[in-house]
Image (cartoon, rainbow, N blue to C red):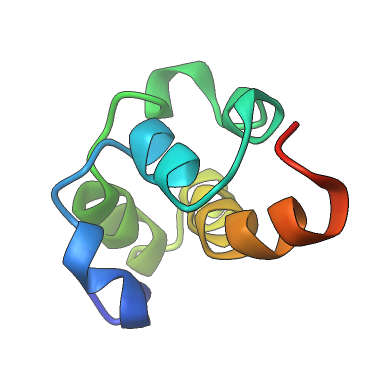
Amino acid sequence: MKKLGNLVNIKDNFIADAIRERGGGQGQVSQLRSDYQNIRVAELANLAAKGDTDAETAIKILKQARKKRDKYGNQ
């Protein structure tokens, strides 16, 4: 859970839904591994904590979703 930081309130959401909720678009969701798109945020955080680089990338995409929306719009 340490990887989540301020995202702990959405830990039970699926990662794809959480990205969209934070303002991310389908382009960001498509960057995820297809088998990770329907995993909950907390599960991905646990995988990332164990060293799974794809899970770490998914968490980074989630954290950056709002910044990307503000910079580029919802793509």
